[in-house]
Structure formats: C-alpha cells, structure tokens
Image (cartoon, rainbow, N blue to C red; front, side, top):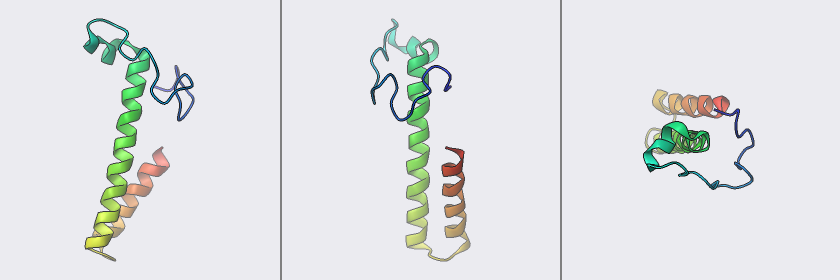
Length: 83
C-alpha cells in the first residue's frame, strides 16, 4: 500500500489529499484509485491505534494490575510496533 504515497503523515503534501473521489461513480475510487485506497488504509490504521489505546486505558482504569490489563497493554504495544 505504501508504494505510491510513501510519505507520512502527509500524502502529496496534504493531510487529506485532493482527487480522492476522482472516478465516477464515486464508489469505484475505493477499489481503483490508489490514492483513495491508501487513504482508507491509513484511516483504518489510525482507528486501530486509537481503539487499542482506548482499550488499554479503560482496562487499566477498571481492572488495574490484572492479567486483562497487562494483555491490553501488550495488545497496544503490538499495534505500536506494527506501525
């Protein structure tokens, strides 16, 4: 996914690049437009990061020091390392 736009966090020098919905009909961009495909891929990665962080914080607040809290921390660490 990173072969076309391999700069981060910007794509083409912008946070939200132009020409995301260049093709008609618009739904075709999600499969045929490399810029849109990579942008959606990045949004998915940001979502996974935020959800893993939220899960770790919420688990540590509700169940501090438990196996669940440690596993939530491990999950977040794995997400960060994968990034």
